[in-house]
Image (cartoon, rainbow, N blue to C red; front, side, top):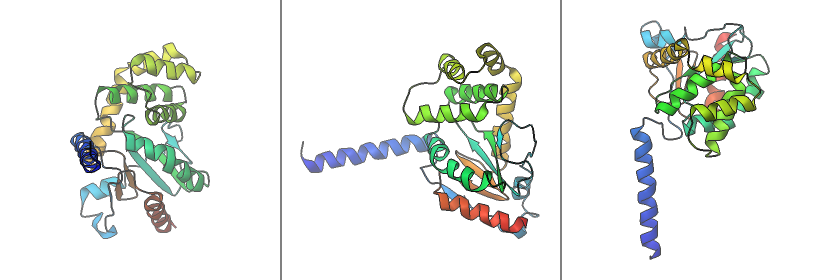
Length: 231
């Protein structure tokens, strides 16, 4: 095969992969940030609704940070999304270090499990881990497995992950199968759709929607602006 022919085939393969991801509704790595002017919040019901997203429940197992932190970053994610994994394993730890640990930001998780049955299984399992106070460890394990290419998600692989984290596996299985858990996952996705979330990862910071695995400065800029408004 000649070098030009090989390059053409490699380019075609890359385009096919991108088209496949787009067909699934997955943002192509970076997505976009869509700030809304502050004076539109009262006129636009979607923008106004974003301001009501923070839960601020001290007992919320799907949250990191102080309930009274000035700013909440609400994420909608899918545990089978490679770009969600990229954000969770690179950008999010830095946000935690800079803002959450300083008491300035609270991160609240929302499910948007739309990439297939494995996504739904993983979302249910993560909530079952949350019932034992281990959501964030389970969240980290799922995304680490995805980045490492460790294969399909099944009830057995999820139970094995739970066992590896020291959870009560029998209780974990019962909680993952609870219809209330399934309803909560669906409710999160429906809320996200009403707020303009069309793919993952998506984030609401104040009244701003950030779409995709944006670079760190996109998040720090939005957070710093929200902190300035909160003063």
